[in-house]
Image (cartoon, rainbow, N blue to C red):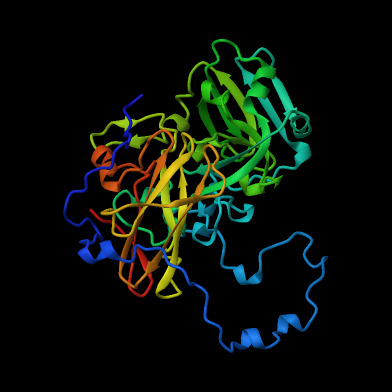
Length: 431
């Protein structure tokens, strides 16, 4: 196993601008650091208060108008979005979660990002089968009803694609948190521990690896060390309380907490126990991190601590003008919980501790907030996550110094948004 960049100390930042970079002016450091109050408007003869509005004069839809509820029509813009030029065909592509439109830590099922290798498989629940074979005492086949009879557990985990932020390795590219960091979602999964199924099959002593295979047209498959399989992996059939959506693997998917999303095999049909990873298959060679000297980091499944400010950001500018302003974002770590998040208004010169709010689960998203009075000065917004293992999210330059710019995967560098005096923001880099 190759050495890892630990990021346990804040990296030094050499002087000089990078691509689309900015020389940080001295005025940025004092851009309104004191939390403010008084966000409410003063009382005025506003007709929206003093006059009876149309929605209060007529009956609305009844309880049978939408048997399966959907968001308000005024929120129709809150959707997953594709990048058309990214792939030749959307059946082998990805779309992105609108993280800049969400709050809290749970991602609604309808906007969880998708990644497919052969499009969405359509499997009727009565036709579903899961086989366990290979180095086991008993080769078994489970129906969905068989799985539903086993003891269930509920856990909240994030799922992040290894390529999340991958297009930013060579510099600022995509102008929006949805596109730079939106290959992630966080859900409560209900299902059976993988350990329960493997114990029923009886793993032979030499069984040290597991091949998980999907039922889609690509027969998507990934190798997983048995140690991880027996630790916290799940066979999930519910997500946020309801059945998995088809695009999320209905009726059953694999959950591999804290590890890169390509291992969370959807439409799971087979688990084969072996004594080595399946070297002749694509999964042991494709998802590697190429270094500048031509070597590659293998078996880098774990997703290190990362964070991003979702508001303000390029798709979510400051609209209210000067005064009390809320900065918010997400932080996560594949090795445990987030212990602290720091926020900088001046591109990393000065850091202040953000406020974590909401439940703190292992290998889950954490929501952070930072309130301050904005006086209209330009900002260089950054966030820095620190997990409970002591890992400190590194700068992009620190990552590049260690790994070069030839990689695509596992970019957890600190993101910078430049907020202009008019409240609009763009994706930039600072050094």
